[in-house]
Length: 399
Image (cartoon, rainbow, N blue to C red; front, side):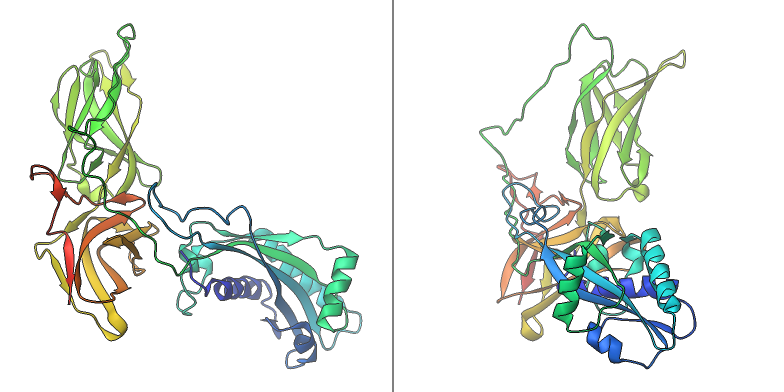
């Protein structure tokens, strides 16, 4: 996500895009007010990118932050729309053709580069994390009437120059108020059993009705239940919308149950996947069951649990947490410290196992820890305890 520096980060990214398009000698891109740009004769040709207005997008105003679940609270991000005016300035251009060439090159560049992706931002400039926001910023031309343009230049108190308007939508500024993510309910009712479904006995197709556990770690054995699951040689497939398909190793097969394990765990990432069973008959025919959602949960690895941390200046606490399996670049990663989501410190590699988090602690205390990757939480319930309870070792002790 992005912080209050995102407005400057987007403007800087547009600078880079336009500067690459205007690669001629003596041409530069500035972000000054129109009167300041007109008075600056240091360069013979200038394209001024002026942010003259900001508005709020009503469609995003009440949208929950990405990854927020029912029962959790988080103030929506501030959805800002940036309105820019592109104006060329030249000092030795009697016919004004050079200014028109500059404006045409700028418009062509924004037409071809109408969306700011993560690679367009200068991550070394210290202008926040705009490259991490889930919604790309789209650059769109705005058709201003002659009357609107006249009012703008009157407000600028500057002589009119040929200009074109653009808007950058949408820039999400995260709220500084911390979100709250309560601990999960351990069980509901006496046995905590969910709904059960039964297949149609008249349908000969294999059916997949359930998978346990629904949020599995790489060490768990998956139990897939259904009917006619022995109608051929089964192969269990996991599929991720971004990282492709991974086959699992089948360990047991019966008519109503298939068991499988994560033998190729190195290819997995935490997050939402889908699972299906492909049955191959003796004659080579293949039958595919309907898919079911399956969450691959991250695990807080390491033997030194609970973690211990000491507050630094201003109460800042820095934690290093081992995640299994490693997360990939671009995934949304938070450490839930008690009920407070803390975003991960950005990392450079394609995949990372050791994650760093920084947050402020008001005082000493013990906090339950959960990792959340793309909306999937690490397990926090001690399944060996009767009745089930929160695992006391999955915590950090702040001193």
